[in-house]
Every structure is written in C-alpha cells, then in structure tokens.
Length: 70
Picture 1 (cartoon, rainbow, N blue to C red):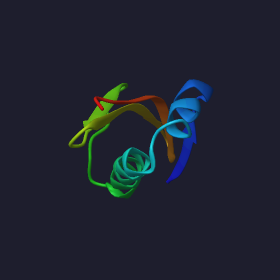
Picture 2: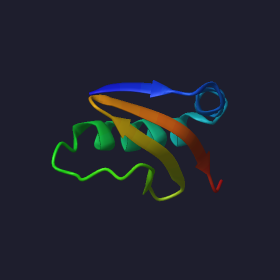
Picture 3: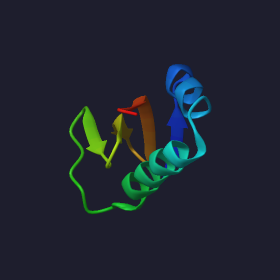
Picture 4: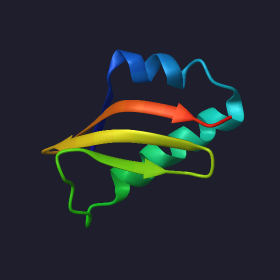
C-alpha cells in the first residue's frame, strides 16, 4: 500500500525525537502491511506512547494525524 501524510502529520513526524519517530514509523508500517483489516472511514492505531489517525482509500493510506504522549 502507498502511504501519504498530510502536511500537519509530516511536520509532527519530522519534529520528534528519534525513539518516538521509530514508534510512529512502526505504526505506519503495521497499518500498511495489514491487508486483512476492515478499514472504516476513519481509523486509529496506538503504540506504547504514540498514535496515528488514518483513512484508507483503495490502496492508499492517508495519515491524517500523529501524536505522542511524551
């Protein structure tokens, strides 16, 4: 699947510490590799400290928001 980040999400992704950046990338990777999931119009996935909100349109995952509790 192709992954697209809206600008606000991309700004957050590139403005966080390396360990948090890795967790966000891990979440994006997990979502993109989960071909069995039923994707509602809006979905979220949570890690230990981070989360991302996304939507799936065909074979494109659009990341709408990312954040961290650290």
